[in-house]
Structure formats: structure tokens, C-alpha cells
Image 1 (cartoon, one colour):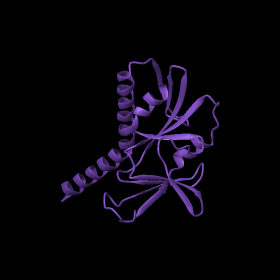
Image 2 (cartoon, helix red, strand yellow):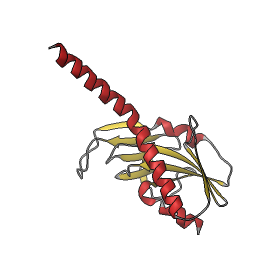
Image 3 (spheres, one colour):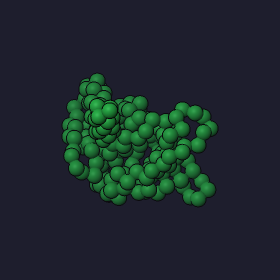
Image 4 (cartoon, helix red, strand yellow):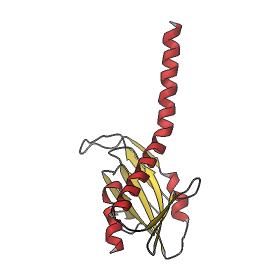
Amino acid sequence: MEYVVIIGVLLFLGYIIFKNFEPKIKAKKLIESLTFYLNKLNTKYDLTILKKDIYDIDLKINDKHYVIKILIVPEYSEIQINSRVTWEVKYGAGNTPGKAQPYKRFLTEISEFQKKDFDENIIKLVLINPRPKKIVKYINECEIIFVKSSTDVYGSKIITKDNFDIFKKWLL
């Protein structure tokens, strides 16, 4: 009986440790994918990974300067942008069309990044992984828009791993 309890506790601790490191592992893989894509473009770039800053990546490509914040969200989630600093992720319904998302949380990790005003020649990007089902931005109480990579979100652009091609478009 003691062995069952010990094994149960070890499995539970292993699960907790995995869940704590999972976003960091996903972020690292995302940075590797971005680096691979930039190498494929055959252009000179300078990518710096930052620790404990309001953004995660400092990227310079030719004369363009990007600051990138990485957001790791649950699969099949929806992101709702209420204001410049209030972003909400809704998740838990899976890939079931029409089913309401039962869980939600505020993305507090984005607020400091959004509050920061950079120089006008610096482009703010939010890199979301995995790609959410939809991203909406509230214009006022009764008007919303669907966010694309070309949409200005309070001075930032939103991209996902699926549309790294946006760099190619911006460089041409």
C-alpha cells in the first residue's frame, strides 16, 4: 500500500513539474522555428533572446527592428482583446464548433509589453503559439473585429507560427 501512495505522489509531482516547464519548452521550439525560417530567407539578422524583460526577443533584420513578446496559449483557444492592456484567453471547448469556452483567464503577461511605448522605428509583435481558433478585438461595447496579422492592435501586430511569411512581405 505504501508503494502505491509513493508512486502516486511521484506521478503527481512529475505532472506538476511538466506543466510548469511546458510553456518554456514550447517557447524554445517556437524560437527555433523562427530562427530556421529566418535562415531560410537568406537575409542578415540579429536575434537576441532576452530573459526577465517585458519582451522575449529582440530581432533586427536589415534596417527593421522588432521586439517580440511570446504568448503560449492552450490549443483551440480564443483570444479576446478588450483594451490595450486587457487581453483574455478562453479555452477548454476543444475543436467543437459552437461550444462555449468553459475556462478563461486574463493574459497579465502582455500588459507591461503593451504599456511600453517604443521608438517609432521599432515594430512591436506578439507571437502566439499555438494558433488560436480566433482573435477578436473589441472596438466599443457592441462592435468587434477579427484580428489578422495586418491589424493594428494598439501599436502591435499579432502573428503566429503559421504566418512567419509576414517577415518576407515586410522586407520586400
